[in-house]
Length: 332
Image 1 (cartoon, one colour):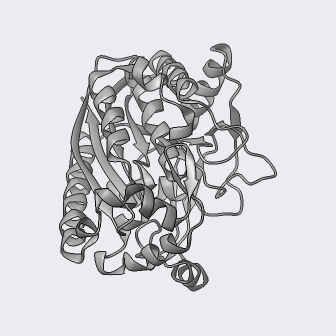
Image 2: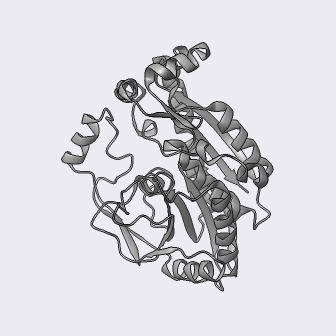
């Protein structure tokens, strides 16, 4: 039978592939945003300042602090990459969120498994780079995409087996059997590029709709789905060391350190009841990506592995507390 031998989780936000000097572009966009989600409600930037002004994030958004926190993030990404490459798993299951990159409004499943034979991560062209810059995101074009198109193998037998077992376990999950004529989503491209260094590990992408109404899975449903995935992987009649990856999070685009700490503490303790009880209103906008960590936690609950937090780095970019809180963890 297959063995779930290791797990890891990492943020994949654009600040990780943008120099600290260039975070200001996203800060300007934050100040114009009239729908910044924070603790169950949306706010304009002015409203957010009034609500959180006493917390005074201005110093934490200063350039020197940005540089220090960016360096801390890069150190943890290097650490994660070295651990994964040294362990050299036979295959990796990547749990990520699809932000209308693969699926669109024409069809939007809450959960999907890609079960084709390969995926391609296309190089970013000049038009795409210009589009990012026009939105205040001067990201490194090699952060999510290779310098030339890269084709990665999919662990197709495991993917199809998982779909069959999930159906028997009460989850009617969408099967994606062919890559659409779009690029690989950034939740997966970041893992291939930054963590796996483009090594062609056989992978299984799990695509989760964390962002878009009306069919986002609840925290409790994500945990249950993780349990079902764990049972399916462990029952696969093939000798293979399987690593699990959760890609995304933590709180953004408004950072909520209190919420992040509550979730991370529960994850480290294996306290799934606390995680399931969290209001779905807390998991909206970018913060919804934490649900990928919940799915990984459900998978790991089917093993004896336990989570260790490597680092938590809140990367602020404005005095209103906007930015992206980054998290890095392993299950061993």
